[in-house]
Amino acid sequence: MSEPASGTAAAGEPIGRVLGTEDATPLQWHVALQEGDYLQLDDVVTTRREVPGVGEVLLAGVVTEVQARHEGASFGSDVFLISEGVLPARIQETAEITTTRVEPECYVPPLPGEPAFRAVGESRDQALYFDRMERKLPVGTARDGSPMYVNLDFVDGARGAHISISGISGVATKTSYALFLLHSLFRSAVLGRRTTNTKALVFSVKGEDLLFLDHANIRLDDDLRGRYAAVGLPAEPFASVGFFSPPTPDDPTGRPHITGRTSGVEAFWWTLQEFCAGELLPFVFTDAEDERHQYTMVIHQVAARLRREAEPIGQDGAVKIGMSTCRTYSELVDVIIARLTEDATRPEWAGPVTGAGTINAFIRRLTSSLAPLRALIRADLPDTGRRRIDTTNQQVTVVDLHNLRERAQRFVVGVVLAAETTRKEAAGPGGLLFTMIDELNKYAPREGNSPIKDVLLDIAERGRSLGIILIGAQQTASEVERRIVSNSSIRVVGRLDAAEAGRPEYGFLPPSQRTRATLAKPGTMFVSQPEIPVPLAVEFPFPAWATRQSECGTPPPAPATRPTAPAFSRLPDDDPPPF
Image (cartoon, rainbow, N blue to C red; front, side):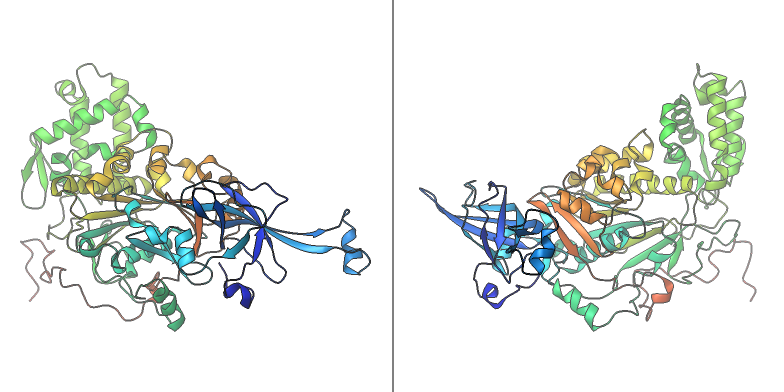
């Protein structure tokens, strides 16, 4: 939206009149602009008409198309004669208006010739239903710098939940916008007292970029602070963040597998005892095609046997199965294969009627998981008690996955989400957990089934009742499970590929916005919400937090909730300090 082009429009004079040469309907109408005035896409326009027995009816809408033409010209070449003054003609600009609000709800078309006004201030808020939103969540600004909102009722589960963000990788700024929404949720006071018990779980696959959310961005200046202030937000980094990264492979100390950040990151892994007792084996088989094979029966049979027969050994999570002690994932896999290939134990571990071909298919798939998962499932490291991914001790929890193979990434996402879902079911819906997942199409593809897809579907369909809100980002919404996308009350689109923009999943975008989405610059998003029939074009400011190590300013103080450990806490008990 823009400032009025003339002083008269700013003073309340009409910028044009309802066009009489095009059909006007209650849902769409056109405005002919006065000479010297203009409208551009996304401007908000209002007009009124008297209706017998009802009174004055307000019709408000958003500009979805603008046209200019020569009136009086018949041929394309007439433009040259008109510009030379030989042929009389007049330039006429018209704007297409898509209705957003009718007040009172008497759906009649505006009458041709009625004056039309540019909506600003309270008039604009009324046209976009902002005046009816009791809890307004800032989601960015219009082009003129005025704040734009979505109704929190459609975010926190009161009337709807979940956010879907789509766009081209590296251009659409999906991750940046998702983090801006989290910053807005935590710092806008829109959650009120619930802010304290609201958490965010962020899975990071974009290098180490999200490991500096608690650092101020050195590019932060007065102009950027002003842009945050325009939507009522402080230009500050996230104040309470916990970081988790997988352990470095083949490192006996279990240090986090990162290079840019040297402190404040905890390594995470699961012990063999947790793997067996929690029946986590199905999350090893998380490819969508796995569920189409018969060996899925073996998966659940083996998981149940591990839960019953694995006995805890020691303090570091080792297990004993029969006469075999397992301290590494490789040793556990060897025990499983032995039980499946021995005639005496095969019926109990694989099922009495399971064929050798099915068992061999399971073994091949299990063996292929050794390389991706051996650093994540282990009992050869001392357990300091800080390796468990836990969202309760900080407001934002970042789980770094970028150094893991794709199969290991799916395992971590599936296990963590399943654990958080179970925790929320036990705790009740008092607090909120916003779960941000990038590349959602990888975890919940449209075709096939998998344990992690089942978890995500459960969150999409009943997460609002549990207080779990999904923020999913993907390059192509057309490749994500339909039920997840359709359950998202808020849909956001950044820069789109032209072919993707034509898919039916983007039917909520008017034709002009579909075309514009292929041209959108970074920082521009189209936000759709149930109360407003036209998606709003919004711009959001550059991150106030560091998005890479080179942008880090002064490091923040260490969180008071982060536990401290003795310097030699990771050494074995029989290896005393050197002094």
